[in-house]
Image: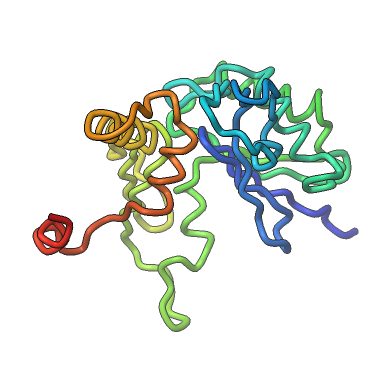
Length: 229
C-alpha cells in the first residue's frame, strides 16, 4: 500500500511555507488584511492581489509567538488549501506541521482538533522547525554525514531561538529564547523612517517590504557603516 502524499506546512507567525514534499513550497502571508484605501479584506494569499497598500490593518492568528486566534488561522488555511492556491484535498493527505518551541499543551490539543476534526487529514506530525534539521542535509558537505553537534539560530517573527542539537536530538534544556524577531525590526525601521522623513507608523506592509528587500546582515559592520555615511 502506497503512503499518502505529505503536505509540509511551516506555520509561522508572519508567513506560511506550504507544499507537498515533491513540489516547490509557496510562501503565503499568515494574516487577514483590510486596506483603508479600497476598503477590501484580503485573506492569506489574496494579500498579494491588493493594489492599495495604504494603511493595511492586519489581523494575525499569532500573538507573542503563540497561536491564539483560531478563526483567523482557519480562514487562512481554507484559502491556502483552495483550488486557486494549492488545490489540495486534506482528506487524501498526511500533514507535517511546525509549531512554536515550548508550545502550550492547550494549544497543541486545539491543533489536534483542527487537523482531524475540521480538515480530516489522514495522519499528521507536529514538531518544532529545528527538530527537523537532523533529518535533512543542511549541514552535509559533499556527501558527508551530519555533524555530531550543531547550533541552530532560528529567527522568526516574534522571537529568536538558539537551539543546540547533539547526536540528532534537540537539547531542550539548553534552548534559549531572545525577544528579538522580524516584527521588532520592522517596528524599529518604521520609527527611524518616521522620525527622519515621513510618518510611516501605519504603513507596516510597505516598511516590511523595504526591510525584506533592502536590509541585510552586515559581514563588515564598520565598513558598511562608513559606506552609508
